[in-house]
Length: 260
Image 1 (tube, helix red, strand yellow):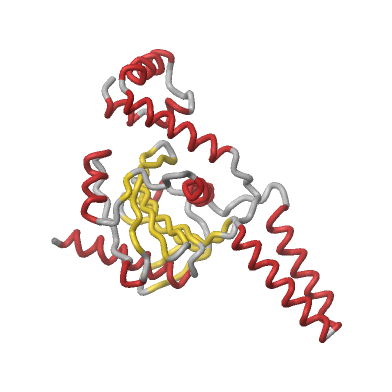
Image 2: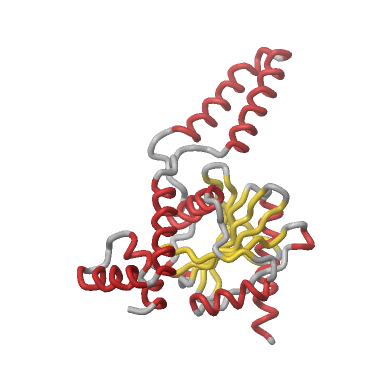
């Protein structure tokens, strides 16, 4: 087994899903290659972090918005007592949405992307390849995994490219692009998965002639769509208007590159 083959089987290997012979071959290569050993170690650490994520926890920013809203309702009800019951009903609904066991995202795929966004934000180096140069990132994906990925330019909106990494979902390699606007992160996932095979659900929104699916999970907003042989997912705490603008810019750049 060489490095490329090891990387291709990295996900199942770390999860213990390979057969006995393949596992022994991977173990042998890992023992002989320090680079792949480090790769497996980092992937294992990330998956451990992902597994220990509190699935019903909301991020601090979302909890702060909730507290602000409850205080606002409290001040309003003090002035108008007849609003006390509606305010309490709203508060109860929001708390239930945060902590009720068994709640699930509308789409398992979107839920997984949100979990990855949260987990990557907590690791020391969320970007496996740190670079703000789009050309370098695109070349890295080609060299690293043979993936041709269009890296959109969001700098006119004050959103800067931080870097990229390879992830995996649905037993497929996923291109992960990391951006940030101030202290707010934006994850862009590109999944080589035909639209007919993707379980995408959510609220349908039309934006500049294209349809997107929006969904909010664990306090994060998501915009997803399928195009050709790929599925795209954006995850962030940015407003939907900003996410839809980013989605549209990605589609425009992909269309422009295709025509060249």
